[in-house]
Image (cartoon, rainbow, N blue to C red; front, top):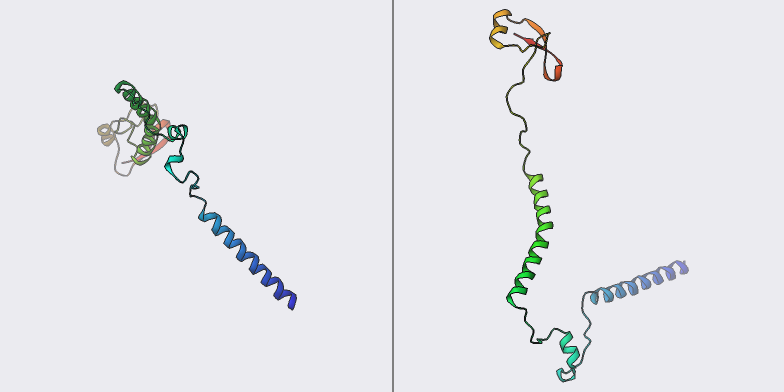
Length: 141
């Protein structure tokens, strides 16, 4: 019984140490280290230039325009592809055909006119005709 209690307290102690270690690591995970001289007079000229200090060079208007065009052109390709994907997904497809009815053919394949059909057939009379792609359909008067 004493062994079970000792194991349990050991497990709790290990879990607590692990939790503290995880908290310590996570608290310093996304923070830049504070490495550098304490005073500004200790910074060398090379380090100052490497840090992005003004060196006197400014690109002229032609270079800046060219850089802007390059950035815009390279950004337009992925943005255009993504926009096209969203627009084609969100907009419903439109009808692709000419619209209107498809002609029905009789046994020989000749088109059937409605006025001739009504003259030659009585009410509730059925006849087998050719429909879309030559499939058989019944016309019920």
